[in-house]
Image (cartoon, rainbow, N blue to C red; front, top):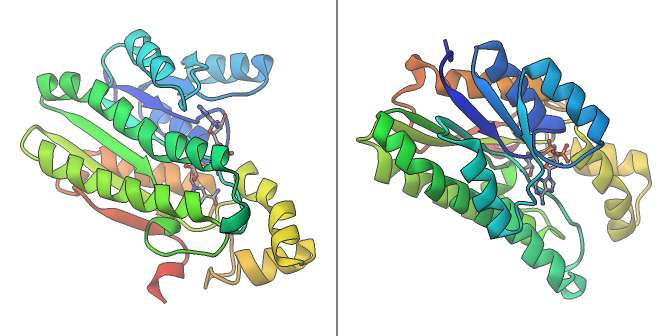
Length: 250
Ligand code: NAD
């Protein structure tokens, strides 16, 4: 049902973004991928999805502008690229703070401001932001990430109100712990910050928060993105949908 629509999914060479891109492609949307990675693997993904790819670094505003220029009119904008860094606040590298705010928050403002004129002109659009359970609640040692994710939840609500009469919806999807490279890669730093073993971090830190005691799978997020793009989802606007096994219900 998304034939004729063009979707840009940022951070879609891996993890959740790739699952969203696959799910939108299955519904017929033309896909623009974005993200880093091995050139051969990205070429394979482009072939699999009939997609184009932008390697823009979304911490750089001029690269975002060039990507949006090249991509053409975007009907479905999925702001998903994000990174994590775990450190006590007094040791948190200033450059990491700047990078996380730029990627996890400011990039979504830039892509949205550049995508919205086309959506308004078409009278249809979908903006889906991958936020996080950390857009609703905090954890220690993740100051930049939690600040950026609370920020993107606020940006999403503002976009929802501004565009409500233009056929454009803006929503957040807020996963708990999804089994992707982002989660796997933060285990060593969390081991260090909390002086724990790998098993302790998995069970006592990550899944401790998730009442279901299961990692969310990326495909579950893809399925929700498809629903938000559907006609049945047209009045879901400004929402922050948790997919966290009950974490934020506590
Ligand atoms: P991932 O590390 O698997 O993928 C991140 C993607 O972003 C990759 O495609 C990577 O190349 C791209 N990327 C990184 N830096 C970039 C940059 N500067 N410019 C452009 N692209 C860049 O991560 P993931 O787990 O799939 O996370 C995707 C989103 O989901 C993030 O916003 C993350 O915060 C959010 N999230 C993840 C989880 C989880 O448990 N995995 C939970 C909640 C929210």
